[in-house]
Image (cartoon, rainbow, N blue to C red; front, side):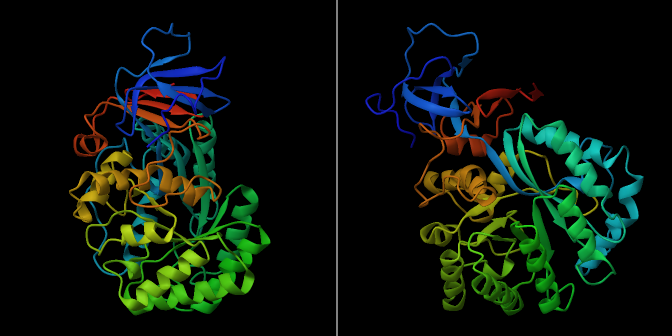
Length: 417
């Protein structure tokens, strides 16, 4: 819970005040903002005269704004006429091929589609994201350039990291490592990888390329790992070997990590301990056909964990609404969480947890009971929305929201500012 004791948090001067809100559903409070941060938190003062830039919270919930820690902005069809899913069932490559066949014929440019989707996500309360941009022999850097343009369009509304992502594998087609290298030079922030065994079928060469590029560009890594069971654990072991050998603490994120789902076996528990020791982060998109990541065990170990929306109504899947609160509901539902504490923990994962995946120095969750992000010194990235409690907001997902990024209102009730 945010600190609301006026003896420890005194109002600053000359900034914005968010008046009459309930941080994490707590007591009615005023949040004082300045320099892009929360400078103080105190009990609501109904007698205070509002300033010209103050925000009337009207008794709404105040939550840390959302962090989409895993989203594919380069393939989205949000806002376009609905198209039925056309991929053939089977291996991952069928989805890659289906996307390749159709993405160029979609209405508008990649930049326009990505910008529309990112803007919609911001209007729903997302102010931080890690976006994947496909880099391969088919699209080369075209999709990356579109995502970078979308990020520039919304630069004052959200902070977005971009991953140079070899969706079609690092080794299956010629020249892909060089294209990822060029993508990093062109402005990508993170080196991507995917299924070293299951897709490229050469984990040593795949991971050698990913880690070499990350060290060359002094960049973090984010590896899609759909591989389940022993195969996925084997790939994780190879990555941990390289993390240890090169001293790359806090530099690796594993996306999906299906091999770690469900109640941890002794073997998986040992891997979780190793992830914690080397500060390897995890992200999930709360899939409905896989055992969920063990959120409580990850929180107990201090493993940074974030939530993402994955593809947004694209050629991979018809799902996706750009509203991370929808995906928070899905995270709680697929984990069968019913008590408020664990539903609220899903909210914490969708906000502060994801922020710590993207920014290593950001506030981290310390347990399933931890509700940080709304105290003095925290970044002033907030979402205000109606609701009796945070859990009720997850269940009802009200669309009336005020979104604040770095102390500035960037969206009100679905309209960007």
